[in-house]
Image (tube, rainbow, N blue to C red; front, side, top):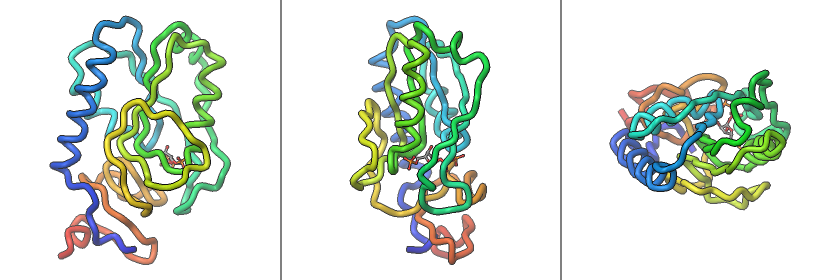
Length: 187
Ligand code: PRP
């Protein structure tokens, strides 16, 4: 596995995101009190484009969750950031959890468990990518962009040790290889 293989191009991402927005719009358009809960840092790029495609108002709440650090596999412990106002932001609302990737499922499982304490009216999940693996935690995904192979991936918000998030495409990555937009295109 090296970083010279693009799995999803920028153009494909645009089309996937717009398709997801259509599905979400069909499900939520006639509801009030919708909250998009965006998982930082990875989902920031995806959520920005996704929400820009919606033609109705959505409150946006950001929450920090992390378990990978500078590794390419989950450390198995998910840290969810504190948000003092989460009760008011969630209670009685239709919550759409937005994450960039469903891998082991530990991050979403931890968040969803915590969210139930805040008594939302409904919770649905949206991920850009789902890995084609046996997930450690099985999560019901309501809106899914693409299923991808079992590779460590970077770009469009996904990082390795804080780097490569701003690549406009999704590529596979091996920590042994330096990666740039140039060599990721195979140049
Ligand atoms: C990544 C990604 C997801 C999570 C998915 O976050 O953004 O939130 O891992 O993995 P899982 O299904 O195995 O739990 P990460 O912990 O790397 O933090 P980051 O979003 O700040 O990059």
